[in-house]
Length: 132
Image 1: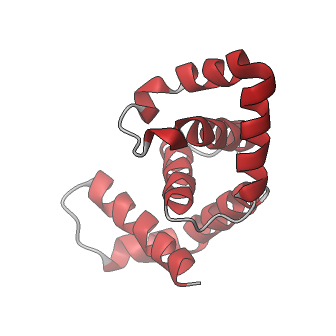
Image 2 (image 1 turned 90 degrees about the vertical axis):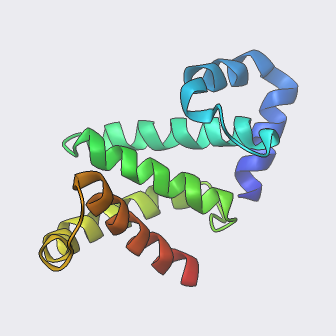
């Protein structure tokens, strides 16, 4: 994510108010972010992800859009995102994976509720990304 970090760092130097506006927009999501130095980067990642999802995956449910953003956030936190443009690729890959594998997952898994079922599905994909 060197490209994103460099871009946000430059943006902070030249237009801190715009960065703060994005951070403020996602305050409720970012409030427990540690280390706090990651907040502006995560805000931009979340904003980039939301814009991409709404533009390219408009028919996807809000739940799966949220899971996609959580996936991107977790990959960033674990230094598994290399470049900002990977965000689009990973979201696409995850949603294709969801279309192809989700029904089988639901058939094979016993879960307490929908949240735990879908969370497990997200983590199955996430661990595949971490192992690569």
